[in-house]
Length: 578
Image 1 (cartoon, rainbow, N blue to C red):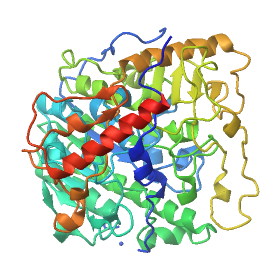
Image 2: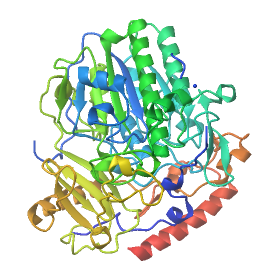
Image 3: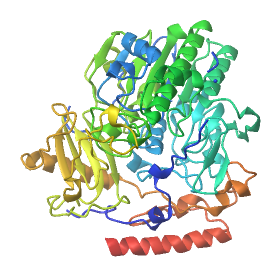
Image 4: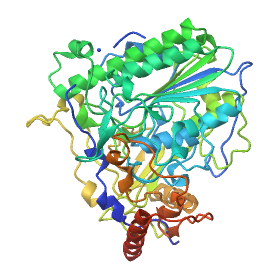
């Protein structure tokens, strides 16, 4: 079977900074305020008599080990209590980096179905969440909800139509890019390309700089709740910047960890505890202003922890940016008075795409006309302990990621090129191909950059020689026993599923950076730069096998001609690669 839209190499991948190099460190108080899934998603739950208020917390780069109830050395009393009184999700999956998780949450679709399957959206890329996609907040608005977003967007902003307030949110306070200084809100996309990134609505919020972002965001949520009527359902998406780098925290949160020898871990721990206090203040506001009794609180991390920046995914394998469990097994729980079976742990298979249909249906919204969702309504699995309708997860197929040297179509039994980075989970089994990323197991006490500190790091050295792995994740959640050689029939079954999903993939959207996106050309701040009169950038998105063409052709700008040159060169390189 021929494999298409797979093997390729993107020139723009070489011209862009690697995502892991975005950690710009700066030195830096908290005010109180059944079978395989070919069918469409199944939507089960019956909404409550009154639509519930929905608060969705998304943390950034919080590791699997970095919460109290996972045995962490970090104090998270609020999260521990909320999780203990609700339902802990211990078979819950997210994506390995920021943009993919956020896009799948907002659309209910896998990355391969939005064109965002490669890397992240970078600040100067003319790219954003596809404008034709109906978002989660838009569906909730249709159901009569007030919708608000506070925190990190990271789904593109090159033109105004991409902004949160144009994608379903009534209000927005937060950052548009991937990471900013917690106090100054400056962000650098490489040396010398720096700008301010704090926005309120569609305007730059210059006057709000100086307050630690976790505190600022919690206070804004409290203000929203105080000014809104509990009689109207409300959806608040709280996408904390914490605990992404730079490692900065108010001093009072560092003090309890003063004896922690690892400096990065000490700062990181303080940031997590500060975020925990912010959740406490928001929960308190829900109760104070009359929302809590009819509310659903969802807590989720966005990807695995970054181990060289203080995070820990122990005892899972790998870290942020990888398809090992340490990169994609998420922290998650649901806390709500509306849950029928509380105070328990759920091991139902759940994915971040599932929140879209689950929350829309819970809100009484209409999802019958929303075609192509990859998410499932899992409310009955969460609330009543019923079996999850989900039996598999496509973790991703990334045709532009560096091809594994040892992979081949022959190893993929003639149906899949195992050099391509991809991963899929079907029932108990997980298959990885290509280069899944850094594969070590890193105990928390070794997290430091100083020499001699990696003495008990467990290294796995066969990664350079392999391009195919199979694990029974239920029996072996730490991915220590590769079964690919002894279970070829299961390998074949999962390769067939990868091939199936690949046939449904749309071209990758990963355009070259646009110099006009530089903050120096936009008043010193990150923000939209493309005018509505310009050619739609969908026409410029690169995908193996061709380009997406827009039916509405408009006058091209001079820089578009330069981008056209790079697109043609990139396509030629990819054709040679294939």
